[in-house]
Length: 279
Image 1: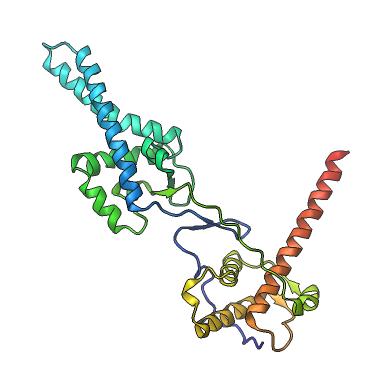
Image 2 (image 1 turned 180 degrees about the vertical axis):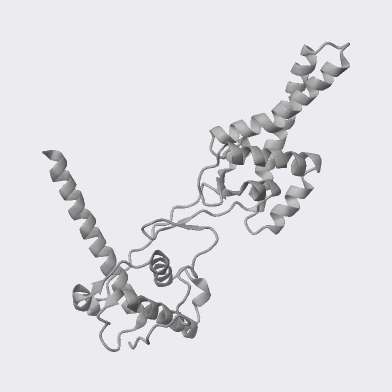
């Protein structure tokens, strides 16, 4: 394999193979947080609306019963208090305490998270409830439906304003298959100097080798992508691979070597900590 000198024009974007639903941890592991589909969001929202209507009726009965019938102003105050409690206080409190859950989302295995994948706070829950009153109840859900249908992550206006979106929690766990060392490159890899590889590049190569990039099924395009990734990798590896090495084999050897060396270093550090703490 001949690696051409790397230039800024040919350097691929390290995160080109990431999707909008991938979050990357410090050890180059992509955490897939898939956004909930529109159908699941509609069903969970319908459950929540039914619960809210029942709660509103009960709350209104309690507040209006407590208010004197002869005092119209107090009755209106009771109505406003009941409305604010049901549409703002209860949803905000529930979502804050459950970290993004509601009865409908709990039933369907959904959760509201921040755009960066973290748990929502009181601020996020309050904004979602405040905007949700307008787009869901005041407009009969039309605004929320149209916004969620158009947005790539199925966000409604409340999610856009709060910086949140709804994810599916109950998804199958996919254990990645470890990248294997090509037998013919084991001797070269043992002598090679492989520095720390950037997260984006490491993840892009791993996804490419594991076949997760369905777009590149055409052999010509796949070979071109492998060559670009290999060219980008040469900055972090020395010396180069033996002449005639296929780019994919070279990439597999580099990742396997980096993984094995990191595992050895972590095991050595764990043994050292164990000896120090046992004294």
